[in-house]
Length: 351
Length: 204
Image 1 (cartoon, rainbow over the protein chains, first blue to last red):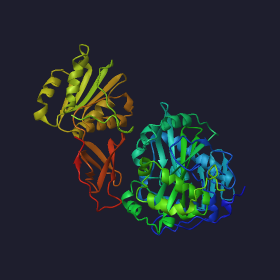
Image 2: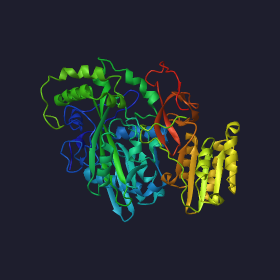
Image 3: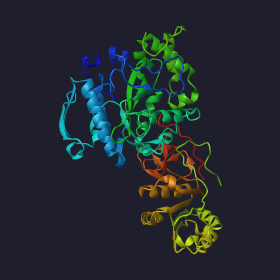
């Protein structure tokens, strides 16, 4: 089953230093635009993650696009600089094998021209053609892989991955690999429960968002993954906006001008999904990041209009929490050229 | 004496009031003014309660704690340790926890650092933090982990605060990690390092 994305070559590009990252027109149109109306407030915006629409980022359970190889190279750079970005508490080993199986089986069935998995009992053979990997290993024996299973497979999968243990009616952030994050630290948050790691988020606790979200998440069963979209904004197409390196990338936050906002300011979309794992009963929580420059958005008139209106009406606490204060007004002014005041069509897909 | 803010975020620990629980062994761990919480609990316990107990007391200000220390000694606990600093007492605490049997209870009272470090020590021995009794008395000075260099600065009383390892000026958040026994510090002037906000004494 070849998708549009499959026909594209993988781009050679960077997410740091010279920032050569670019989206092709096809990749812009398939992005999971996060606003289904002209304003934004926190909500428990969960839906089932299956039967995805063709030609969108939802088409396959674990989306692979033209940025795949370059993103994996950026992840390897981050892990070389700071191995604490990938951690597992000791009781999460089994969940790591669950994650490896889930990702390998889905990638092989969604993209057979790129990935293949052959299983003979516990003797597995994995081929990842875009990354030039051919690995035979024994499922369950981590001495047969170059990394522990969670790290091994997530070095080959776009997006961050958190693995949540379920106990005491709560979810605990007990393992993960986090190199493309919107300013949160796995090293600090590891071992926290659902309410604790979300503690710094303003307004949403008071609205009962996290209590309801947790209730929903705990009901997720194997084979019925769920998803939601989240968003923030980032200056330059930098994947690694970690708090660890905030003193490095922070100065870029005040470099946005009316002249460069179109190409330098990005809508950062998180496609979050939630997967119950079969052996460990843990929950896999992938957070896949999509970057669209304001210029990219302007090629889809409905999205540029809507982005303008969302930024105009965004509550100040949310804008500050997301770190938008340094450039929000400049972005609103630039986007106003795409907003003629007419109503937008419902839903988030392009017209 | 200031108390932790009730409106603080959900990762910030909340503390209670020590109260005796029926158990076959009681382990108390306190620093400075926290010793008084043990003395007060002792006023309403069954006879011989302290016969099967251990007290680990950090007396970092002997001149101020003489009454508390005398009152603790009068409890005639068969195991009573007194040490000069929290860090000096932690190996003792760790060993005592590892030798505890089933049906034991741990009580921790004192400064924010004492509560955090003793909780971390218990968790490292695989004890659920929710099974611990805690009561805050005394200093709100914070242990702060610099998110950038990962170094921990002890006894932070100001906002912002300087990281004693890498020197960055840190916003001390309420976001708290029990595993690190530390609040999170994030560079406050990353966007414009020439902006240097004045430090104010807030965690005392």
